[in-house]
Image (cartoon, rainbow, N blue to C red; front, side, top):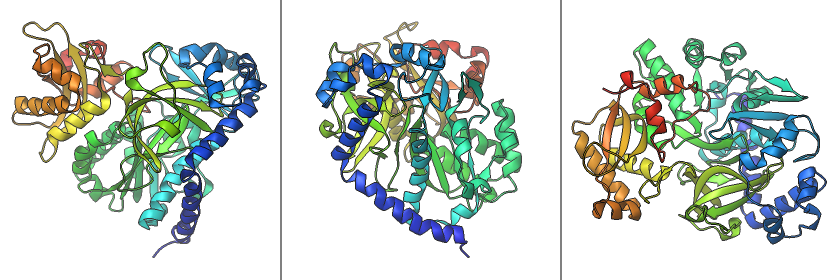
Length: 500
């Protein structure tokens, strides 16, 4: 029998769906309104004065006045906000700083304002409501829901609260979901990830879990611990678990492993949240890509990834983007980020409405030999090579081997298998063929005998977890890069225990 909550969820979902359709069906006009609103609200800030916002009447004016910046270049302004100054990047002071660890900048402080915070919460909620509206499934709202996230404990710095994004969002769980939400506050505050996951397993085992959410690699760890403790598939332990919500990485490389751990297929919703903004979510179960959030206080610009490092790359708005092109995404937001490069690359799967997939990171690629292989290509190659086989991969990363002991250079794939192939070289050949098919530069290098086909190095069970633990990044929102242009990650592995 359906509860009042699950019955009421359906008309609410319909109302939200209709609201989303209004802006999704008027994308150019919506973004134009967001752009004008941002410029108008920030013209009296220090950044606005420095960049003559009062003279900006068009997007062309904006391009002339505001250069593209990454965190390092925006840092002088952010440092002033962190020090307690008001009206620097946005009106007043931020509500929060989402604290993240950057690769070049050390710790990064990403501002979240009273104008931007609601969209972090509403976008996640709307993703679930659009799922209810599309599928008619709402009974899961009566069960327990879990999001594997960072600690909600925050510190105060110059009147601004500082914490991890997932911990900040934990403070905004709506009242009607408070009783359904897991883990407990106490467990959520545990800092050590392994201890935390063990506690979550203990808390959730007796419960009616219906929704499980988090970054796939860390949910996998949770599932494995459940399986080890009970000897059962996750789907048998949680018989009403039918919805997996994830973000942060591409789910496809994990899908086969997850379905084996769960013991059956479950519906999934993909999200694209970041400290800088909640950019997109999956709005249809059978459509590729996530609906770009055009009405969330974020103005989007795009630069073709293969032109990004040119001296003066062309900046465009959604009006000019094309399906299937790899773009660097640039954002300006109501949290005070301006023409800001978040480092992600995206590809549009549709422009009616605008849907994207995350194709990788502009800094995460291999081009040691001019091949410019990106994350999406290695993930697709792995997916194609293992499709319709019983091979299951737990985790992998790719690095160039520039100076092998003998023979030509090659790409080295470090793979942790859940279920190993009988023939490793046959798998390597399939992956290599897929990569050649996708990337013409790589094809030319292989065919021209500049590179030899890729080689696979097996990683022992839990090897990637050991590595993440060794660098203090186990759990939370931390992820293994799919590929890199050097061997720094591989050289940092605890070698004595890593390889079989």
